[in-house]
Length: 443
Ligand SMILES: NC(=O)c1ccc[n+]([C@@H]2O[C@H](COP(=O)([O-])OP(=O)(O)OC[C@H]3O[C@@H](n4cnc5c(N)ncnc54)[C@H](O)[C@@H]3O)[C@@H](O)[C@H]2O)c1
Image (cartoon, rainbow, N blue to C red; front, side, top):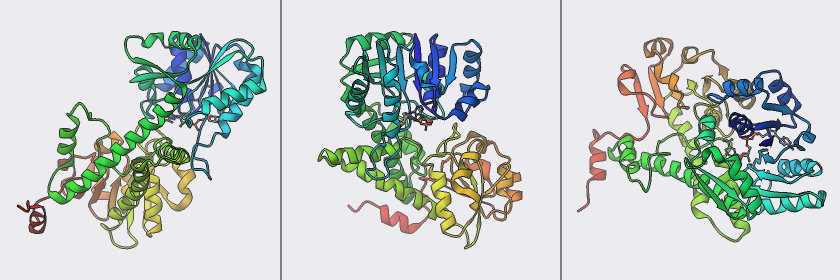
C-alpha cells in the first residue's frame, strides 16, 4: 500500500519507518526542510531504540522516502497526519493550527479516493471539522476522514509500533475500515482492532492518557503515605498490581509525570470538558497535584543540603530511552532548584542538547556522571536510565564533596550505595517511636 505520513516527529517517524518495514511504500513529509534534509542525508533526527537500523534498512531498499513537498501525497492510498498538537496558550486545549494547516495543505492534492487518518491527539469532533475544511477547499475530493489515535510510548516507539495493545479506528465508513484493516493485516489475530465512532476514538485517546496520569499520581500519593507509616512502596505496588483489575504498569513512584503527552492531554481534556459543562474533578486534581509533586521533589532535594550547595543531577529527559525533555519533571525540578539558589551539574545520556535549549547556561553540562558528581553535595537521580544503576559508586563517592544520594526513581539497590546517606521514595522506617505512636490503631 502507498502511505504518506505528514509530520516526521516522535510519532510520525516511527510510524513511517514501521509501515515501510511491513512492506508498504512510505513517504514521510515535514514542513521543516532542515529535518527532511537530514533524513535524506542518512542521519536520523530522534533517538528511539531500534529506529535507526530500520530507517537505514528501509531507506536503502527504496521503500522509505522523505520530502518537504506536500504534493508528494498524490499517489498515497492513506495519508496519516501526525503533526504536533501542543497546548494552546489561551484556551489550554490542544492548539490545532498545525493540524488545520496540514489539512489545508493536503486538500488540493487529493486526486483519487484517499483515507485521511488523524494520528495526532485531537479534541473530540476535530475529525468532523477537518473533514468539512478539506471538503470546502476541494469539493471534488473523494476521501474519508478517520480518527486513528496513537498510543505508542516514547522510548518504546518501535516496540509499540509492532506490538500495539490495540488499534482504534474511528469512522463510520466501511470503505475506510476495509483499507485500514488491510494496512493493519499483519496485526490480525495478535492485537485487538477496535472500530468505533470517530468521536469515540478521539475521546479514547484523551481518556486513556488521563487515566494513566492519575495512576501515576495515585502511586505517588501512596508512596508518600508509605514513608510515614513504615511500609515499602515497591512491596505495596507489587501487591496492588497483581490484581488483574489494576495491573502492574504505571505503579512506580517518581517525580511526577511529564513528556509531550500526559501534561498537555490532561489539560486539554479538562478544558474541553468544561466547555461541555462537565467538570472532570479527578483530571483537574491530577493536573494540580502533578505540578505540586515536582516542586515538592525539588524541595526534598534542597532540604538535604546546606544553602548554596551543588547538586549533581543525573537524568534530564522525562523518562529513559528517549532524548525528549518536553515537560520533563527533571527539567522543572532543575528550574526550582536554581530558583532556590542551588548550583547544578547535570548529565543525561541522550537529552543534553535538548535540555540545553531549556536550561541555557544556568547549569554545568557534565561530560559523564562522574564529572557531574565532581564537588557535589548530593547526587539526585531524576531519570531511570539503567546506566546510572551500573556506575562505580566508589568513584562517584570519591568525586563528591558529601556522600549523599537522593534517588527519585528508586533505581539503585541499597547494597550498591553503602557508605552513602541514601534517600529513596516510599520507604518509611519504624525506628521512630513517634511514628509508631502515630500509626498505631486507635481501637
Ligand atoms: N510523542 C508521543 O509519545 C506521542 C504519543 C501518542 C500521540 N502523540 C501525539 O502525536 C502528535 C505528534 O506528536 P509528536 O511528539 O510526534 O510531535 P513532534 O513535535 O515530535 O512532531 C511533529 C512534526 O510535525 C511537523 N509539522 C507540523 N506542521 C506540519 C505541516 N503542516 N506539514 C508537515 N509537517 C508538519 C513538525 O515540523 C514536526 O516535525 C501529537 O498530537 C501528540 O499529542 C504523541
